[in-house]
Amino acid sequence: MQNILVTGGAGFIGSNFVHHVVETTDARVTVLDKLTYASTEESLAGLPEDRVRLVVGDIADASVVDPLVEEADAVVHYAAESHNDNSLSDPAPFIVTNLVGTFTLLEAARRYDKRFHHVSTDEVYGDLELDDPKRFTEETPYNPSSPYSASKAGSDHLVRAWVRSFGVRATISNCSNNYGPWQHVEKFIPRQITEVIDGRKPRVYGDGLNVRDWIHTSDHSSAVLAILEKGRVGETYLIGADGERSNVDVVRAILRHFGRDADDIEWVTDRAGHDRRYAIESGKLRSELGWTPQFQDFEAGLADTIEWYQANEAWWRPAKAATEAAYAAKGQ
Image (cartoon, rainbow, N blue to C red; front, side, top):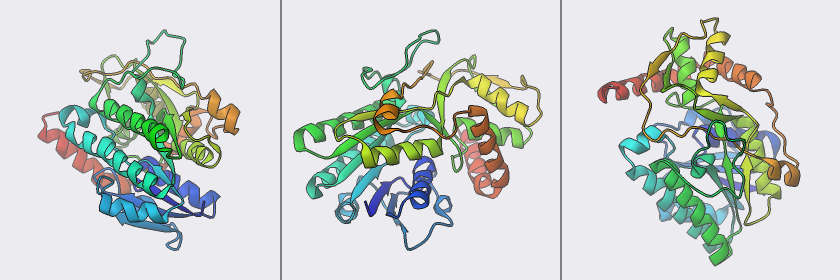
């Protein structure tokens, strides 16, 4: 594939995928991104201009989407509204981007017969009990808990319907929680890292025992590229790196890295509809496509991420100030 259109390619996970494609293939990449608060041109800094092009536009706008899909060999669809707290306070943008935007892209992929990969989340499956030995698999029923996860579940169903009804050559991946470079400071791990850098106490919802299955974003990128190149059309692949950790354990690991007391935490009221546990079984991806994660040790991946935020304060500091101002305006 010589030309790949990456939606949301200036955001956290999408930009890391663009870097991975440039570093590991000869493909040219067109990034389509709306450049909302959670994405930035700086995430693509240093990439060769003859191989990476940024188009600022909305995936729900067919007049923008159609010519870009027509000229591409494949579409990798990362663009999404993805912050759970924001979906609770204002669900509307999640419906427009995650549902209408996905529909618009699928229609273009159908019109021009393009390979399409849809990047989704494990949150579509709802949650598991802390003592449940099971993990999510490709056969787990959907049970979304928030406007965000419901909109992503709907977008997954759209992709499957376009495969079956119209023959669109699509695959889907549902991934566990990502961490790594270029992630907006509103998200859990960078928020805690930057709070500790600033000498503050990290804040943890509820009892802190909610479990997430963490994967370094570079491993997510390599998995998506493997699915794009070798995945079977119509199939779904779950992406995970066996990184289950409770929220409080993650925060304590960050505090230890900085030499702080592991219990130097501010406990805050739990958020509405807070899923208890996510856990991914990625055996299908590993056995069919031969994929394995590079960061099999969560602590090593976390240290790598902390070092990146320490070295790139100029990138995250403006976003940190804007996020704090927004929270203050909401009385949080």
